Amino acid sequence: MGQSSFLLSCRLCGRGRIMSDAVGGPRGGGTRRGAHAINSHPWAMPPGQGPSEGWTLLAPRGTAPRVAMCVGKCSRIVGPCLLVLGTLSVAASVLLLFPGGTWRYLAEGHISQHAKAVPGIWGGGIAVLLAATHITAVGWRCGCAGCSDCGTRRNAFVSAVLSKLALLGAAACFVLSGVGLTNGPLCFYNSTEHGPLWGYPFLDAGGQEPDIRVENYLYDHHTWSTCLEPVGVVAWNVVLFSLLLLVSAAEMVLASLQILNGCLGCLCGFCEGK
Image (cartoon, rainbow, N blue to C red; front, top):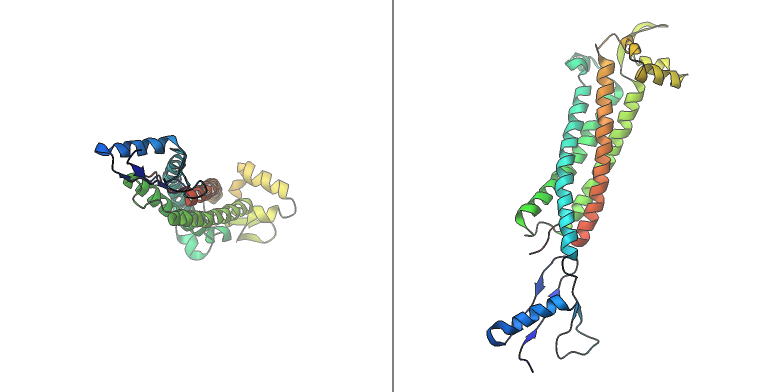
């Protein structure tokens, strides 16, 4: 009978660490046989125990680590993308407060209510940037430091929670931006009933005929000259609110992807063990 014995243990869910202990055997021969047993058999039973006790399940080689690596790589892509999108959202929302590039209309209060709500700052901006910062930090630390406690399940859980917050913020930004784009800008125009005044000419003109409002405002650029002040405010409004719509839609897609990615990280971790 051989004089070597070994004890195998494997942490489930891709931690990738297999501890073996070999005792005796000339020149470590028992260790080599133990390693061969690890690679060959998915089930291992320590000697001296019955068939109904002491069994340890060994994860298939490469399966869980491969999933964990995929989760970490996804975080390193999603995080920087959300950072860029969140920054664009903040910039677009801030520019909406300064039509024509001047601060005078903001000081006078002649800014549309949906631009004043700044959905791109608190919705598509801060909420998304919080999640993006955490995701990027965890993903890149994981890629640079191997598995030195960077991909814990706690970080994966926090990532999923922050991604849900980012999803809600981006959804709110999408809705408010869509309404702001539909209603049109606040501007100084000649009203047929009350003369020159500040208001929403495209919203007022299409109150009873919304189809005409959409056709005249969004598709017929000749009606944009209805607004006398600020100069070019209609194009300013359309471009920036459209940008917020696109950015928030992309943020919702990426946040949803990261929620799924974070749930996988809770099960498998972010990093491949060594």
